Length: 526
Ligand code: G4P
Image (cartoon, rainbow, N blue to C red; front, top):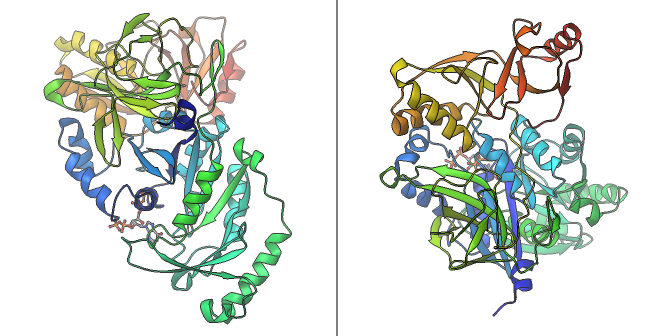
């Protein structure tokens, strides 16, 4: 049997981030194909569709999108891989951001024709906050793409991270023949074996006289020149990768499987095993035998008949055992974690044990909140909280039927405590007329649906013009008497903190100018 150290050392837990349509789902599926978790590409989507039977999934079915982030585990070449999936639709939510808190590294998929897109930028920013390693996969090389060098420069310029091409594409579009592996100093020439099957590969040296026969005269000349040019660039620096300062770049095509396998192999070698994590009592070593985890996501009512809630935890240290007793730090209660589940490829399974790096979903009787810590009895440290992210969309919300005031307040507060939405009230008034802030518009749909189905309350919602929220760090006067411009408003949250919802930089200038003593917090998270 493998030791605790061996088990943890083989864990690799990462998220795949991208703008919708760049190819995240396709790449994930190809990882599963190469990892042997599925025999043929195409299975993941099929299974996912079949699994969408619960009420909660109704919205997903209607909109044809994935509301919730999921996680998939598989084994490959001695590694135990956990892929955290983040919804790729533009209606993504705070869940997407929070999922990144559970990852040790990220794979950023970029469409070779489009380059860095808005959602790539947003998700990158959250990863960069944690200084986790970020690997770039430039996808869709089987189509006409932009110049590879220009794409690397765009990543550097737009995202502020240095890049190092690990391989170099040989042609693009119909002419895409393969890649030159800079580490092995070899050409990997691929042949399409059908999209559902692994691509066949022939290797060759750069100075092989038979190369023009394999990839053509023109591409041989271009490749030899490109490789020489690349050689003049900076040296590869693994340390810089590990602290998120340098992104290794790979080119390929997830659809045709070209370059997927070399990417997976190289990525797995470079991406770190679970690292120590910061708690309020110092760093917690992932290899310590004591189990500890934090809750990064709560998913309620996955099955309406059972009113179940699942709390997803990232195990940060030690080993989880199904029968063991654990300690929930925030409530001060000892407990068993019931129905612990892991997601294998696209299916759920009850697990008896799991290790640092793994994600488990456990039944939540309503005690967990986002960011909570679970440890072994006797330990009381807390992992640093998960930030909530600045909402970008706001609506004023009240119950259609004023008789339902009580249920309304109960519903909005519970849903806000789960972290599905952020709620605010106006200073000096109650919670019967609130402002809801979200990161993605889909959260409004989920909120409305849940208020109706779980609390029996129909909502009246009105869009508000604000697009930003900033926390007030200090202000000596009465918040109700503040001088505001028309497109800004003071809001108060459940923890009695004050914020200003506003539209643009101009409003901030106005507010600071007209309210002496006003100090604003310019952090990304609120
Ligand atoms: P996402 O999860 O990032 O949103 O993207 P997804 O993998 O769903 O891919 C979006 C579209 O791009 C899909 O086409 C997919 O087949 C295609 N695609 C992904 N990787 C590649 C690639 O390497 N080359 C090419 N040419 N296309 C690629 P679709 O027509 O929207 O969907 P489908 O009907 O093919 O599933």
